[in-house]
Image (cartoon, rainbow, N blue to C red; front, side):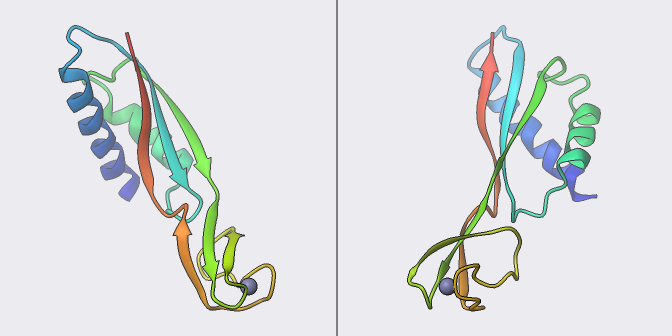
Length: 113
Ligand SMILES: [Zn+2]
């Protein structure tokens, strides 16, 4: 389950951010997850609940913002929205797509008090 290592990576980011704000409580960790990032949100939530114990993020809520996938269609010469990798262009049906967004996960925002 790679969500476990992703959650551990999130904790590392939170710890780094919290270091400059001692003492602090992390209230919310807002994550941005692309539709094409191959991350199971529910599995990630579960993993986060496990790895946050004993860490600076112990009392934190996980807030997940899903970002739609987008790709550049070489036939249409424009960006189109796609729901998954390997889908054809919704406008012209071409398979010549270059993924341009929604393929990663990142920590967008932290609420510290
Ligand atoms: Zn197209």
